[in-house]
Image 1: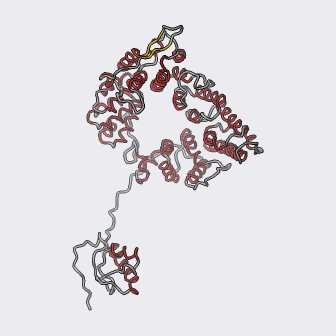
Image 2: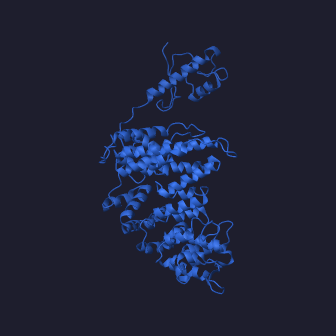
Image 3: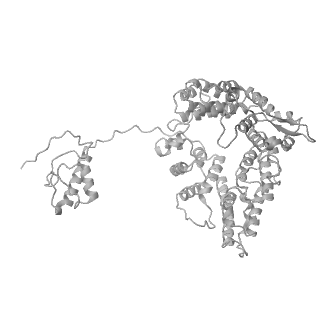
Length: 557
């Protein structure tokens, strides 16, 4: 009997349920969805119906498989071959020298360990290799090596999983890494600031800069503006001005933030115009940038307002500070960036006062109080419980204006109890003030703080210190850990500081710390198992320091 076909309007190349002839008595035009349902529920509960009628129960499984096979073959036969794409252009050559062989093996080991499952529980005495990847990359970049081609995929995977690795990983990957990222959507994060994996155009090529600025993606344009500002701030401002009025509000905000790099007096006219922007966030950012310029007109206006609120009081035996907070937030204040509505729980007048003081050049207060230096101004008594509000605003001003004299005054002596000293007792604010000081002074201040107060409040302060820690700071941390162990302290409370020590101590300290790895007898009243934990922690610290020293030696070979 000749086979027959049923007419259909369905395209068999795109729809697996398209009809066709079948030699089987039980394989006909069954919709694919129906076959899936039968497979999920079972042929005893939902038998297939090739011709509209259920098949015998004994034949149902075979009929289901026959129908599924027919659909599969039909679909595969209907697929058209893909159109071949053009071969990608070769990657831009990377002239940097290759890694030494030992360093290449080390990197492969670090990247392989990154994907290893965590053991959980106690860490034991084994170094945590995943925490050493950032340091290895930073050291390799300092030496100017290029990444091995075979390790680019795991390197980009690591950077995809950890945003903290991206700057160093992408610098190490170089042009070949960007080229490779352009071929894999999983690594598209690497293309930020580049076009389809290509290198950023030469900022000294005006045509290339203009073309990317006018035609590039938003992230590419932000990166371009940052690059131009880093080399020539006035040129970056001129580039931004060419399209400023046509940009979206959220884009204007991001572009304006790029002006922080190389901020100077030449930016003031542009920022003054931005104070009238239709976006509230743009206006606020422009006001913040202008207040960071002590000679700007906005800083002068804010200083006039602040001095009318904060003044010396000489009615008593000693000079003190009198405060009369603003009674209103007028239109001029709002145009200069003062937010009229305070956060929940804040009073309006204290909120306005803080913003005025924060935007006032700090040198104004030294003149306002008879030429006294910052240390003496901060130490003056403040009337009517306004000290906390005033000192907090001065802290924000010191951070904004990057003023080390005032940062030093507001920090006070590191050995003094926070409640009795001038300035701020907030650890978060102290860490920000410390970041303004130079590296040596920063490390010395934190070392004295730890010697006086221990490690309980030192974690944030240690985070702003330059790596590797200077000798006095490293010794202060280790001594405090040793004291905590001898005092029977709960050992897991110091795991964060111990982790920082593994990454930040000078590797040359390993031999001196060997004595701390010995297990001690359990002390009365100490946490159960504390002695073993401390021993393991110090063993891990010493092992990690020696491993870091080996890594550095391999890169220097």
